[in-house]
Length: 168
Image 1 (cartoon, rainbow, N blue to C red):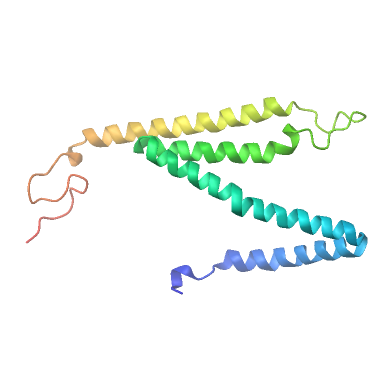
Image 2: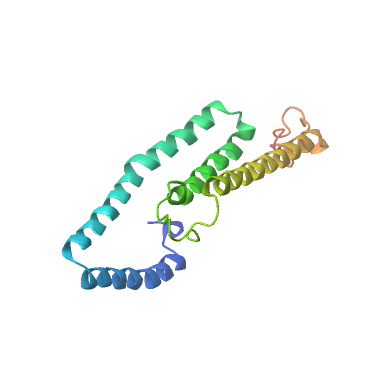
């Protein structure tokens, strides 16, 4: 393993904090609930990991790959970020969108309209994507018009890197 691949301080801090929390939560689950409930939670956790690794990740990788193949390269990264941001917003809001936890006797549990909140968050994501794309497009236009971007001529470096000295 090269030095660049060595785990950093963040990994060890995360393990030092996270491992005891997970161990305590697992102990509480086993100690304070029935065996059926413990196995139901374990089945739920394992199902979530499998759903993530075998369905969600391959679907998102395929979508991101298709975006790279179909969208012009200037906009591809911005659109990829927007699609991933939209997927994240929908995943976070999934429970509220489907009414999980709603109670008719306590309307304050979900005081906001989940659909409106989700659509607003998705709109903010795409507004940010549009701003990012417009700024990068404008910068590429300014760079294309600058004298440093002009073709330096044969044997004087590439148009992309005009500060490269000519070969001896």
